[in-house]
Image 1: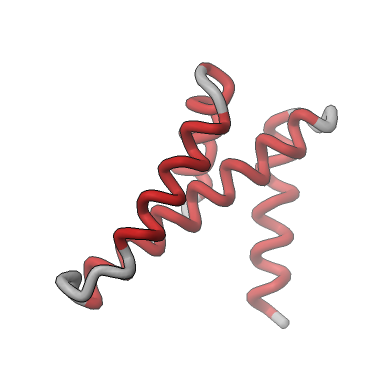
Image 2: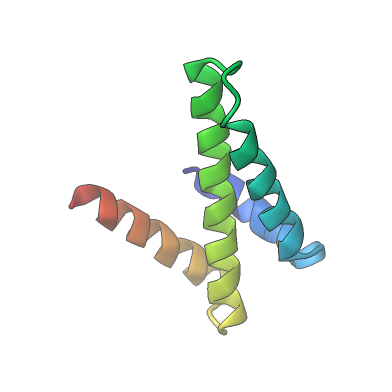
Length: 85
């Protein structure tokens, strides 16, 4: 996951709607089921999906009243904390 990408996607959600991101996630998840994709391509799609889910989570925190910068940092701390376990 890349924080600048998640931040950019969060701004997209603010300007548009989170439903666009949910539909994109669904589309990419279906695409991963294709046997025509190479492992490297699946890795890239997986990274994009992770960033999209991250942006959705940050958007939820912001809508709950957390400032965007704090929401981004909180999310990344949670991700890094789960990796360390």
